[in-house]
Length: 443
Image (cartoon, rainbow, N blue to C red):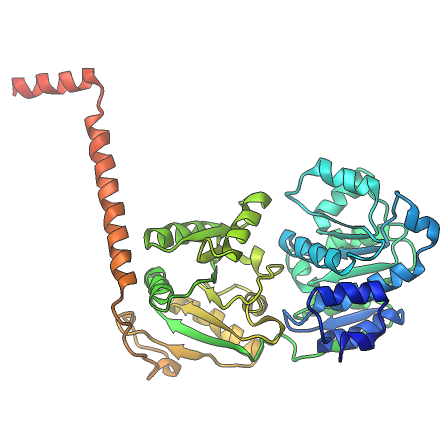
């Protein structure tokens, strides 16, 4: 369906087209009419299918049409739409999209999240916004300090609701809901559904319309997914080899912990591969900087934890690598959803060691799909292979200039380390040197 056929106002349609939209995706075709009709909605769609536009476009349309002349000219805005997200990255991305959609409308959009500067957020809220995007924890801080009034809310959106519940935000959501006293529409959007989401939906949605444009907990059919069977201690070596030999230029790599992410990024740099980090211990400024460098090609690899599994919107991202498989099988769907967005193709690989097998089984059961298994000669493991891996060996990786560069960098790092050790040894205090010489002479 063409965006012209949905009946948006001229200014909203102009903004949508300036963002490159020509046709509506399936989730947008189904959700937009329901939201404009005043229904509560419970929607499930694969990551990258346009969920943000599906809920924000009708909200912007309805709010704009309901504004009076005095409200348009007023400097003091009241929050009319509240969108809750589980992470800073997703909050920032949603706010950025909504600002683009409303660029020709008399509306103001704001975003607040943990890690952002409190004074600037307070000033924003005091001035007033029409649409507020927030993470639950930071919003509660502002509510406690009476920086924001939610009594005029007309729309409440829970984006990636399952992730918010997995992260323990249920109590925070309940507190926020108690501050939204006016009758409003509630919309729940997510790439996956869980029992927790269904329970919450039954509690807060009023006779909702349910939308499911794709199989629940599914990954895009246009993403080529495969598994590389390798010893845990050789994962980094294999990853460097795959990136270098295949000349992958933009690779998002998911590590299991912040510590393992730090170590992996450091080792990739020693292999001559420029890498940046994105995880919870990094400031928001550092995370934004790392993401920008990754987008503009300054670094080839962005090593991240699951904090980046949702909210990272990187146009045409070609490769996603699971260095460690996620503990929750649902998180695999969101990681892989960073590539193959909006109907495009992509590649997702997982490096699997024997200790990862139970996680792999859970993922395959969840999405109802068995992955291609690959064993690279030279990276065989010292134990009997599972039955499904037999005969999966691929041709040996050819020697390349990359490999030579990798070995040179490692040698330089080793020499530098030895040189520093010698320098440190020579840098003994004069008194200590004189004492050692005296002892040696006596002997």
